[in-house]
Structures are given as structure tokens and as C-alpha cells.
Image (cartoon, rainbow, N blue to C red; front, side, top):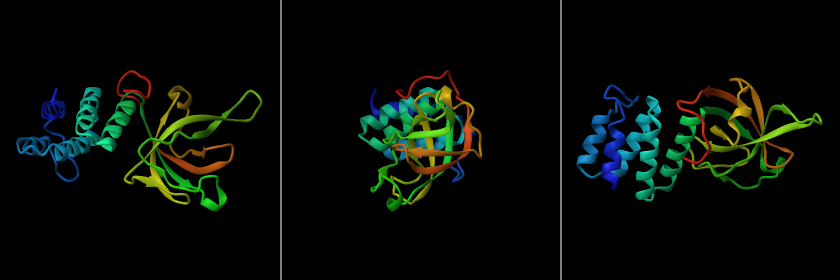
Length: 200
């Protein structure tokens, strides 16, 4: 299916009543599609998808369209949203330790590339903290630098092990056994469909 058809198909999955805080509706998407403004239409659809939880097919279709347009970050975001649709959303406020206090000396991509370990309160059979892997997406910024703070989204490798997590809980990020950052859980939403893996 070509890009316009994919974007049209995704548009049909957005209820007409859905409106963003900038007063964007699916009618705006149709207008941009009529003028072959596919990238703008994709951006608007992503925005609409954050207002009202769409079906999994919405994000899958947008991911395919973004891939065909070679928009890597948009494609990665849509795949990320596929994962969240299946497994739920975890958002947290993350503060990284400064470079002089931590192993990390350089910024990392905010687009779900980094998969650090997290101490979410579990213990191993020997009583040591049990660390669980979760990919990390940084909201509204392409990179996160040592010493910085940002709102992040987490995609656990084993979502079932994160079910006890609660808003307000403090968790720590690790790239080795030392603490790389501290996060406060802001929001947890359950899955919209049956759980699956990070692949969409």
C-alpha cells in the first residue's frame, strides 16, 4: 500500500470528535492529504493518536507509512506506541547523574535506542537488587545528556515484572551496577490490547 493510502487508512481509525489541544481534528489531516502534504499529515495523526487511544492498527499503519517515507524517528515512535498499546504506558521523570559522577560521559539518543537496567524494588534470591531491562524514550528531545532531566517513557523487556510499579515510586537507572539516574514514576496505564513483545 502506498503512503497516501496508508495515511488515509489510519485517518479512518480516528473518531471525528477527537480534537487536540491545538484544535486539530482528522479533517485537518484530510486537508493535508488532499494537498499531498504527507509528512504533515503523519505528524498530525501522531498528535491525534496521543489524544484518544486508537487501535493497534492505527500505529502499525503509521509505522509502515513513516518507514516508506524514510522518517526513522517517526517510524520508531509509531513502533513504540504499538508496544505501549499492547503492554501499557510507563512515564517517569528521569534525572541523570552528571558526567563526573557517572559512567556515562556522552549524550544518548532519546528515540528508544538505549536499553538500560532499572531497579524497581525487586530482590534477587541472594537479597541483591534485581535489575530489569527497559528501553527508554525521551519525550520532546532527541538526546539526553549526563546531568539533565526529562520526562521519559519506558518499555520493559518483561512487562509482567513491572506490574507492581506505582505512580510516585522512585526507581533507579543503571548502565552497570552503579546508579546512572533516578526516576520518579509519573503515570502508568494498562494495555489497550493483549500483551506482546517490543516488536510490532
